[in-house]
Image 1: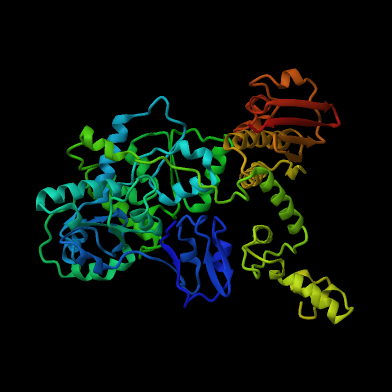
Image 2 (image 1 turned 30 degrees about the vertical axis):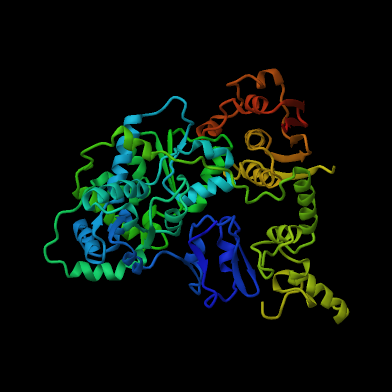
Length: 436
Length: 140
């Protein structure tokens, strides 16, 4: 599995900040550098946000890639609109994109309105599971795929707005230019590593419909310069409040127009909600929207602005716009494009062994080993906690001697008597120190 | 084959923490590679059992034993016991007070749900001594 979240080896100092914050325990420190366990990474970007050395980053494409195509289309995610101070005119952003190398702009917000129009027309299907879970956050989809297999069937299998936008925009561009599809480059402008990954490795599509992704953070400066030089921006905005609103948490719920909905933001809150649904504690709603980032997509770690400030701007922009600008609903042919073209599969990244008997035997060994570990969860071994370390040892990813306490115990035998305080670090000493 | 045993203490009066044992158990069962429908059933049984012990018995403990062909869940408490088991098994019957109900619990579905989602359920109870609810779930 290819991820957008990668390590800058030169910057990484091998500290333990990222391993402690990763919601799926997907990082270890080895030979002084962080190591990302690819099958567990869900591209949530928590490590990028917490790294004190800015050593974990997201790879997105370089603007140079626009030169690979004769005609380039930008698919801006609406989170982009909220990034600019004192800026309430979305046309400035859209016109600016045409000044930095794109020939055409197709808003993901417009596609979101087409999707919303479809879902409200479709209504609630009798056989659809309750609650239905939104497929709009690729991190949540990956999280469900590795940790909540039972909930896969609750996911409403509709593609991302940016993916629908890409399909429609490519078709339009082919008609307008007469160019063959391979000479048209379609690029999303994304707020987070999960969407950058989704451009190359979509969750719900057999093959990608986008040619690449640019991080909002990376195009921000060139775009801002281009916007400042604009003289007479042409009206380009093609979405209303509904489409623009999907940049923030609960935006999709509003777009769907249902009263029985619930929106959750933040990865920990999302995990808790999924746990509860799995336990049969279903909130009294039909639809649940989960965003891995605080406040929704505006909280993505590839954005520039504070998520709350960006949300405030998005909301104000929404008030200035009509409810939607969705003039022409999708044709029946186009509606087929909305559906997932592949079935989401359980990816058992936490399973100890394919063979259940062997998995049970490993579990017993892990428990026995963990009972001999200090439980300080210090991270010196490179694992996020003692349990994860015991698991690593049993799975052959670490050696028991990687535990600093085990080494100290042996040193005590060499040093002679003097009680455990001689070799234990402060949290474990029994005698009060003079400095206390 | 040695069974996998898990033990979770359940604190009395703590509604917020109820569900913790279920979450922890689920993660372990997923690591063991059990079928997801069995995990879901076990999670529901465990959660209902946890809530019951929180509401009625001032806590207790949950014991889980996993073998290749089944999961045995035991909810063990030293609470007041159940005077009329048949009545307690009726859907909608609950002795929970208004305070508990105002929190959305005490709908009288706990034991019925535990029976519905397990393959076998047995209640041993003695008034004034406590209750042990044993549930067996077959692993297909």
